[in-house]
Length: 456
Image (cartoon, rainbow, N blue to C red):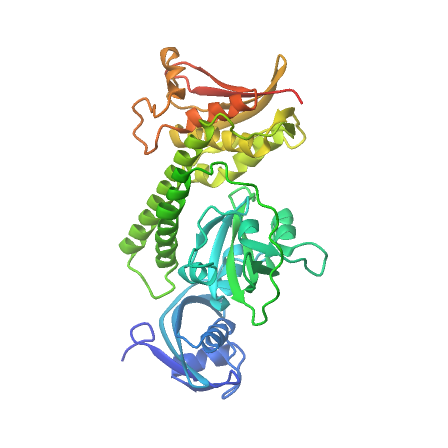
């Protein structure tokens, strides 16, 4: 006799959400969850998936984790609408020890519930820039055939509406590092409205690294709001426009599709195929990064490179940059030491450009630092300037090469992929803000990059 793990278990749910037909394994699970024979399906994850399939009028397949007494149950569920009813086919039925109780829901479990009911899924980093958008999301948010591109700020893609508490729920959630359910948005340039829900992503130290969540189409469009002013692109040249139109959109689609395969939305995927999908997504992001470098290169070599001179706090910017790279450091079992929260270092410069410089310097330290090492980010006064020092425990740079590392396309024989443009661009940006980047290093002793800006 086959167990539920060996053959599909079937069920049928009517328009009122009642479990009207069920194989024994599903019927027993329904009763153990507190349901009654012929009553509303008592397993919330299955009921949610059935509602989604009925609402979208298309088959939907998801991995589901359901509580079953003292254990959790891993299921793969396919819900197929048939008239007013929904047919369920369930495989898997693998029991595992339940996660220990915690004071608040885990973000991943929050996301599982959001994803099960969402029309499309998304993910953003801690600066609210899109890093993942499902294929359905690309289609739903396309304007005049042009799809959003990964790396766009969510505030550039959407007009955020205020919530009941007065501010946009997404921004409140960003400030509190918590989940949100009811961010109403309008796609810029259209009358299409959506509800966004998301769960925070936290690193091993509990620091916010971004959000992932779902988008839900709303039935009643509104008159499109006037788009908020958007800073003009750093580079309006034809070359940059060709890069965006010819490369960025298809690469974003590749990354989105690879991430969708990793999420296994359309069915279980073999472990090696799942790993291949991860490699494809990472390669796509790498190519998007190369495009950013090339666009930045053309921008920084212009005589009229736009930079602002405004008061800023270098310690705060250093903490922000370190936070953005915390997950990458965790992947290498590395630690980033950053300025204390009470520490401040006033200077003058362009906030976005200064953040870009420090993300590059700290990212290089993580990339080239050895497994398990520490990257130290500190701030200090240097004469009439204010400085951020990024020190790693890598192989260092010989004095004879101290200036070569800032040359265009120079990589000093590094094996990691890259263009050799990061330090060149960063120094050009620093000097455009009347600062500089220098290196204090000896071969075999690690590198110390010093980013200076004038006093505010």
